[in-house]
Length: 157
Length: 102
Image 1: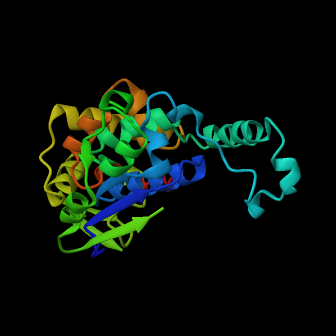
Image 2 (image 1 turned 120 degrees about the vertical axis):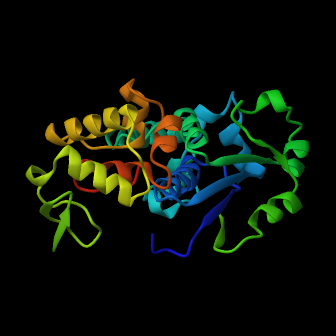
């Protein structure tokens, strides 16, 4: 392989579906290219690894100009759910797995999944609230230690 | 460009993928695998059969497809072809590199 990238570390800080997919697709794509990958879930990104929440991530319809929807309209009840279900249909057409299945694929592919200790404490989450495939809960210092090698790139999403 | 492998002359692209599947033989597959540092086992051949079958049916290959195949799981797939399983399996199987991002 010609790339100098050996390892990709992603920090997922947002709980919107499009950000979760961005991290997942790039992390999975890295593994497919023989590049190591890990995802550190922090703040709202933790929604993507909470058993009860992960299948209910939404696309943001308010404050998102690319939705081409008036803000007032985007704020109506049910709009986020509607936009999300439309997006999920398109994703299914492209054979993109739902969040839960994607996490299984990532874990089986050797992508390491980490929870952020500070955010887990802040949201009063317990280990059992988070997916079984999670590799552990780390401090940011632990995470930086994992980045301490040649050819490693960090990406904040 | 042309390449001689297992006593045969085959056409490959710049990444080493065969451009004409009809030139592929099991011996060619074995040699291609060796170049990738892989010694083929019966399990590898099952994967190769699977990806070739998908290619013949013109169906897209993806990791999700592997997971759903029921033949092998994602973990085993990565173990069999370390360092980019779909890329390597398709190269050895003599079919084009998958264009999908997933």
